[in-house]
Amino acid sequence: MGMQNSIDLNFWLTRGMARRIGVNISEAMHDGFLTQADFAQMITTCRTCGRTELCMAILAEKGAEPEPIPDDCPNSAILNSLRALH
Image 1 (spheres, rainbow, N blue to C red):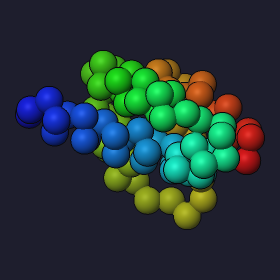
Image 2: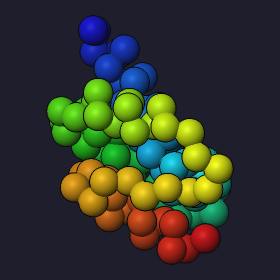
Image 3: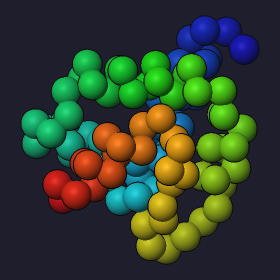
Image 4: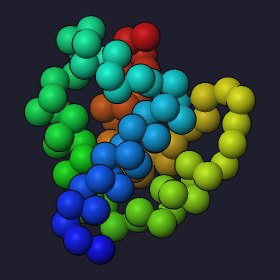
């Protein structure tokens, strides 16, 4: 997988994990709770985690309500703090 494809995948994984717990990344940026630089860092963190396939499997599970993400997700602290703001 090329670098751009990896970045694209991790962009969507990061947004998907946020959505899983009920966080809208675009809304968080619009409301000033998250900067573009913060989001870019989250994507980089996702890229370096090495658990892409696990996250894809988690996101494949369909649920009607917000669901938790793994506590050991390197972005869990920021995502959970964004969730607490809404």
